[in-house]
Image (cartoon, rainbow, N blue to C red):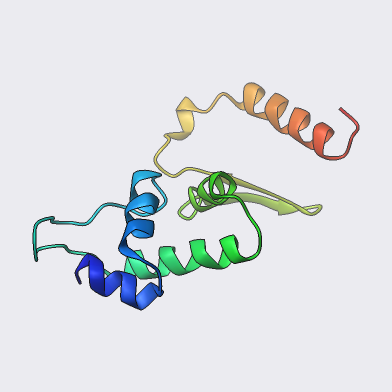
Length: 114
């Protein structure tokens, strides 16, 4: 579908879609040109998710972070916390101790116990 068609499906102006692409919220079109834009259902789905989160009051930067984990692999789900890992990072490259320290710091800050 073209940029205009995607904008129509999402009910937003094309410039907002260009913003979302520039910010990395949506992937770029497969092809570009006057009538060769190639947007697909992935763009529609991600665009709708972004717009829903934005309407809930989330800031674009926060939404971008949240949406970056769409394809993440859930490792732990318990005690009201979910740990997810980017599947593009090989397990042997994960510094477990650094990750645990970062999680400990983040949870401490969240609970005001850090």
